[in-house]
Image (tube, rainbow, N blue to C red; front, side):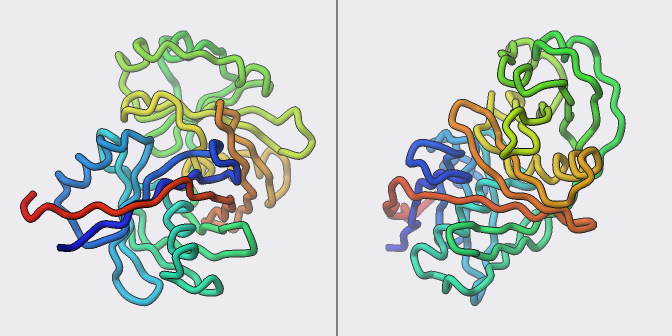
Length: 268
């Protein structure tokens, strides 16, 4: 009987109960309905599914408890961490993931895992005032970041104080709200939080993919290509970042909390 190996990993942190948790599932391809059912059962912001394709090459898909998503930073970080930790891939070898967002590369530098992601373009956006009322802020500006909205606030304190009305947000059309401001800590350039009740995630602890938009946004304002950021959710997470033309490099750490195996049933 074939099995799927399961790993619970906290990404963008070295704390056992910090960062963003993801389950990484490594094994043979499964029907989409089963992948979604597994993600709903684990009930984390994302479950990452890995299927081996060749040497250091894997298919990678990400599911929230409700939908498949196009890009997920912490799920990718967790997947790379598992492959190196288990010896599936040598620590000095880069990993190539085939995903909905194209090929994504991961490489390791000591305890840090670097991911190479596509830059997300930003365009000015006008939103119904109901969004600001539901999230509880008056943004300095609003930008579209793909299907998400990016809201700039004046201070880290404003970002920390947010307590959105998720019922009101769900009544509005949307995919996700990125809220950001300059950091009050000299060790970080900016902070952010992310709310996505539309896909079953009220607040995501640490969202790597958002930084594909946040990095070019802050690089332009601060006049620097290398940045450090913190996502200031309750669990929190740290990112090292670099803008390289149309790509965003992001680095984080990860820790495995538990691992196990699931014996595949003979029929779906």
